[in-house]
Length: 168
Image (cartoon, rainbow, N blue to C red):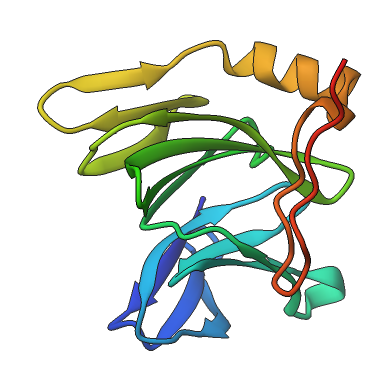
């Protein structure tokens, strides 16, 4: 089994407890808010106003993209295809659900949520402030995303303009 570990906001490591190895994945800035596994051996780092997406082809580590979303907590589920993050904007705190489709992140939903913790367990995602709440229907979100990805806004890469979802 493996784990992602950040040390003093200096560097991110993946530790393989069975293989007794540790691999340095990235240097970190001073605004690390969360790390999570993504699909296809990706690693996602929430830092500042961006998610940095790392891919790992043939034992190397490369930045695949940086997406514009201010995240201060992060959790993934369903083999990394779903990401939940907490954001803060002029309207307050929001829980944002994102989904991967063909290498791009799509905005699946947003709701007001003032949580202090966000985690994944057993393929489920939970948020907690005064009480624990579960994000329901994760399989349904993936099913709709796979059937109609154009219905969901693509989260823009850094420097890219946001594109609205197609209306049906």
